[in-house]
Image (cartoon, rainbow, N blue to C red; front, top):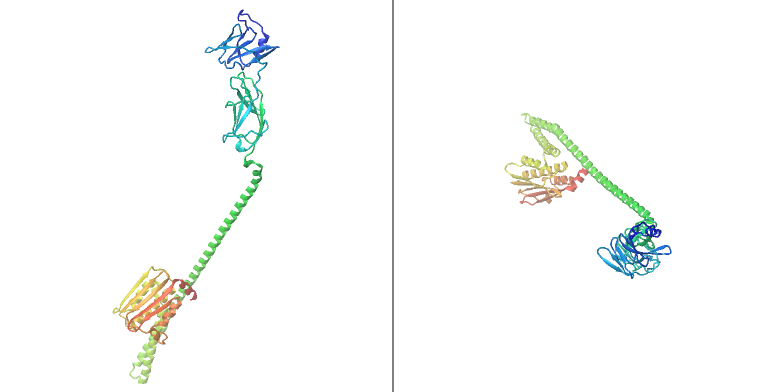
Length: 484
């Protein structure tokens, strides 16, 4: 250090203490007539006065003078002039207090940072803010420095517990966002322009845990997990039972379908075996009895034609020939009833067409018509319907003297229908229904229809022709096959 007048170095222990106690870097010193030191530093000025070996620093009175290292000069009479280069100040010195300590910060308001709503402070003990819910874990503290003695606003610092002091970025407010649950001790202080810290204000508070981390939630979690496991178990059991019921239902349905298929297969096998046996019997009868009756007829005719045959013998032989001829006709009818080779390779409609061509002479107009959508029917029904049509055609040609015959085979939604109508002489069905001769084959119609679960209606009157109508429901065909 040098004296400004003599430019000689001087040793000033008191000034060295001043340099050590001042938080700012001192650039210039000026002592007025009263012995007061006016200090210029890098951000302004302050006044220092030594009393009883201790420096009293006034950093607040002239805090409004801003500028790096201002030039300070005192005049006789006590006036002090300060130049910052852009401003010129005139100061009137006065005796400062013994020491200007900074007051403790005062909490004036508390806000919920999420909703920006005010949290009441009334009823809360000083320094103890109490407990806040997790929804209130963002808090904004608004402080007052505690005095209007300074011309510059104070800077606030805060920390939790014994942590590091951090400056507040919002002036006199301290924002604490998203605090985790737990207990806190918040400390707040002010820092003046010289960097000295004021008294510390302490605040205690607690942030509650969210509901899903509370003790009641932890107690409820095992119940919820158990309920979830039980629900999954019940759902799995119901699903397994439903699947098992579906499988059992499918097994029952398939079993019923399999039994029905086996019944149909068995019935078809029996029907085919019956038809095959009928064909075999027809062939055996044709090859044995028919041939035998043919040979017997030739022998009787030869014997009856001998010249020396007595008339009584010839008369007996003639009667025997008539009986043989009748037996041959009956055998032919029986063979026709047993054997139906047309159905072996054709359907029912085609077989009826062939029968019409064989039995109806060219002088009679005959027509066969198929109605509806043709569907597959069992062989027994085909056989009996073919024989009913054959007998009806034979009666219309031989006995009714018909000039026109119409045959209709109809496939409806529920039944199979056969109709044979002619314009012949007609008859009275009631008078011939139980006749022994069976001229029109009515008992044969009804017997065959009954075998396949069908019904026969005969409409005829003398001179008006005849209509024979046979109806076989589809639902009765299977039952008929079982009965056969």
